[in-house]
Length: 570
Image (cartoon, rainbow, N blue to C red; front, side, top):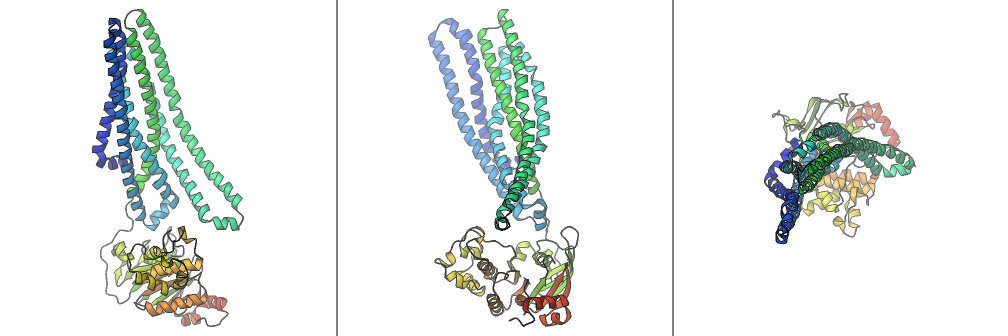
């Protein structure tokens, strides 16, 4: 509920105007039965046709005013809902982009996607409907009851006898329905995750002939959504028939009482006709209110999910300045870290001077990429410290920290945009810097073979490029900003040995002042590094130059012989 208040507050002027217009239009609707009763009981008995036409014209005028104002109010309601949800979606997206990696892991990508899409859609519907029906229905209900009191208080008391039952029904069903809609959204999260996995892994699924298996798996997840939605809708569906039951019982009692009172001369036929019209209005208003509660229950569940993200406190806060005199450019000081309290990397300790190159090698899952993520402060270390130029990275603003880096990750991405825009990445770099980076990344040759050159447009995720071409574009992006620290996380695995050698020579020639950290599977990629770390199960089991590791680290030596047959690699 706080979410609605927070985002509708800046729009309160437009909201109040729209509700006022809707209120006036609804009052015009309430006048119609009253005028009809007056025509039947007072005007028609006089036999004056002019008076009949006059009051009939008043009914037509009220109807026109009601229709025009209702249309205008609905337009205003749609505008308020649109603008409120636009701000919610913007703030939610911004918040998601600033979540730490561990917070994003906690919520999960599918859940964040569904909160940004289906949940905000539910909020849009709720805000819009609450303005359109949320005012009209209560006004018709309360106004209708007041009008019936003026017509015949006795009949009103008979009708009012069923309203407490209707109110209790709405309360208990809505109380049970909100958790069910929350559970439904959780099932939608699972569905989004499954679809995302199937789309991302489509090639693997086809290659391993697992299409039927994935269809069965999707069917199970899809059935979970169906079951959750069915459960929620069954609960809320009880509202309408129960409301109809109570109100129709009331209608029956009113008809019986009306017949008796007309027969006894206690009331007039016109009053009964008007009263029945008001009863119909009240009946429809009550049904509209039940519809509001159904949608509001769904909107409230979605609002809670969105509000949870918006209220998430930043995990990676900037700490007080922690700086020491240190000639090293990058220093890992006995760093340990674990994703779920179990150490993924332990006691990582090394020093890099400006312009030096560090190579990191080890088996899959040994913690190589984790070291890179800690350096970028995507996660905070559990113990130890990481310093750049003597300053602890947790005392740096994240934007200040990240501008020092040029990075390519194992699973990096390309936008559905031109090569130039993908390399520039919104940094407004000069064209000569972009072209220079493509030359150093060995991408110039294949880019020049394209008709549009750097203006060649890529498809989503760069699917119209080969694996090696993608990696060279990503390398160009990392190099284009002339970074202080270059991080290459297994970024040359798709390059042949010749291109890989050219890349290393270009880095040595044009980026001598750049400190480079290379995570690799091939020793040839890091053989010339000033320092190499051999990682196994999150620990450094070997540290030194290639020559030193060949003499002192048996696992490193085994990898070298397996990859090269013992011959020196250029």
